[in-house]
Image (spheres, one colour):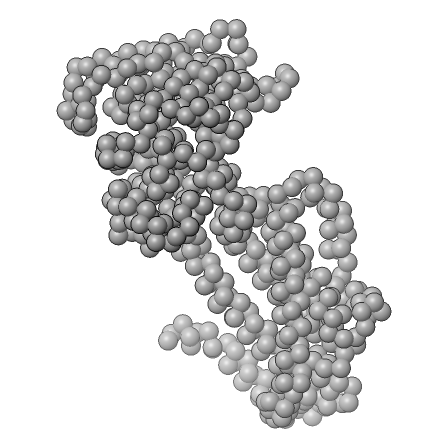
Length: 271
Length: 251
């Protein structure tokens, strides 16, 4: 279980300090799919970096299965937003997926098995010897997902993973993630600014305010599974949840968070 | 076929020009090309190949190798650490500004006229283009790649070998290519000043003994060596940077 308690993150110091995150508390249970959604400029990426141990919070704690997160934990894997900058262009797809495994599995056969399994899970079993830049954007992001899966994490963090692909690919990747989660039971924490995506994927949607971020509301998504791009999105309940989350975000984006007027200007910039 | 003939057209024309203008030359300093070629065959194919060409090339490659290793190692360190870069910058700029040829007298006094002094001078001069390109490349590495490396808990050695060096490789190769040209110049220059063997030594000795065709032959050989070394280097670069070439062509 991932647990975040009163997380605060401020960049810089003195008069130039920017308060990205004011106070966030949330938990992600084992096997759960949680989406964090917030307006553009909410400290979403900052939050994920704090969660995966790349950034130290200014205050508050992050724990994974009771252990405080002070650096990247072994049981966590990340999929980054910009696939073209997160894969190593000098390595083949296989080597990209296998690179993080060297410290986990000594035997090359073990690694090969996991690479193969992860590539099969994202439908790229025949592309192992290609270079990432020979593939389309959606396929590259699947490689990044395969890299995360091969790492066999308990929790997969995804930072706007589908923001840089076209709409059709996006829908395909959303369904891919749902299938993977169904097959592996891995806990998912996905950050997005896309409300439809958040509601479609999640068990719970955590709505963040604009900077300095706080949790506005956590919305339980009681849509039936398995989800389907057409059927699920046609449900009246989907529309209700979507409207509810949209209203929450609209309200928080319009109103500066209390007692921090200086930070509103910062909200104009995506981090 | 058409491309090859296009490439060979101008060199063939220049050779023809050289041949015809020199054929009936009476100037002792501009001997007929036929004589130069005879001298070339007698000297370099392969009488003095082992005794002079090989030592020259060994010194050049040794110097270049040392320069590349030192330049990359120091470049990675300076590229990663801003305080270290600030502390070292004045010294680097000073050493870089000293003309390589001016180092030869110093090196002879300090290290003698053996291979060590020559390799030392070549390495010293060639280290700077590699160093500066490496620093630049390391500073320019995408922070997202470093986030990936850290979040997947790659060790320092893995980050160096799998992320840092490959990412910097295209610029490092550009630096080494510049260094190769400088190494070639320094190879010849070190052999002109105080030497007992080498292509440069043989060439300048020929001039000193009024063997003008021999001097021309040595110069021709140097040109051929330069072209061959560059071609070999480019072949190596195409192999190592295949991913980069492929990626650049695609975009």
